[in-house]
Image 1 (spheres, one colour):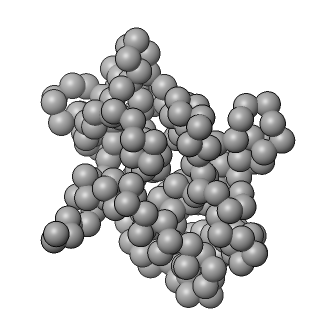
Image 2 (cartoon, rainbow, N blue to C red):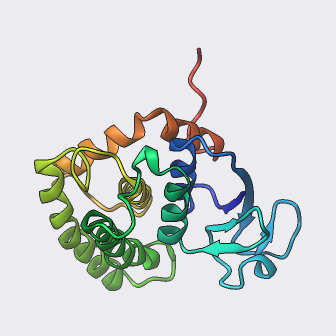
Length: 206
């Protein structure tokens, strides 16, 4: 399998999941502005949507959209329990949380990355994000991970999008449980390996 990614983008979440599962996964960086892969391919021929992530399967098919890719990867090794079993109430709770992160957090960050976004819009979007993080804060104040006491793909996704707060100058100091969660996830060996591989942090000296 091959994951098309851009460093620190939402593609970091499935990258983390793959490393948590110890799955063999090739990486190919994408210039999302030029729509070119690092090997020179036209990315639009791989993923007509033009954004990351995209997962090229061993049979040549391409799967897109982070929540779908993460669940696909988790189902390759169900014994790792990064996603509850299909058809169970817990799986629907996972999809509920992935949907919330995707629609209420992930997409709300988008205009904050654009320099041309008016200050008024920027302030409104930041306020919206803080309101949406209030629910997450309540969940994490009572349990270690989003779905309870086991790390899942939803945690990889939340960690990935919440990392963006620093880059867009979103103040999350009022969310101590969320900040503690970010530190817990960042300390996981698989997460460290993914961050190093994407050039987001430096390899720690042995």
